[in-house]
Image 1 (cartoon, rainbow, N blue to C red):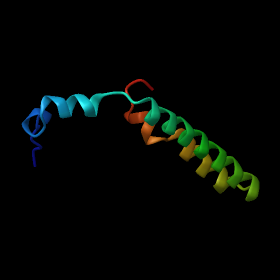
Image 2: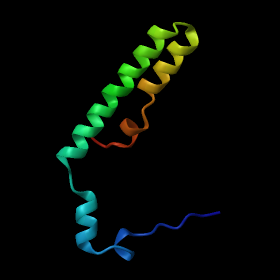
Image 3: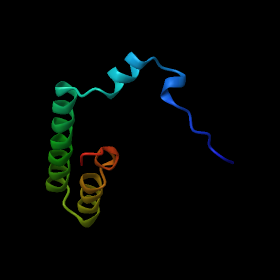
Length: 74
């Protein structure tokens, strides 16, 4: 099965594309807070229940963040 590429301009106006591609200080701050909350949550989980499984879960959650993989500036 072949995937067909669809252009955003086929469905959105130029103004809508511009708004979707724009940067937001608020969204950036929320993403930074979310990242630190994940790190703190992993640390709390390991402190509350220390064993190799929780350590590996923390490493996978912190190190395998999909947001970092998708973000071009990361």
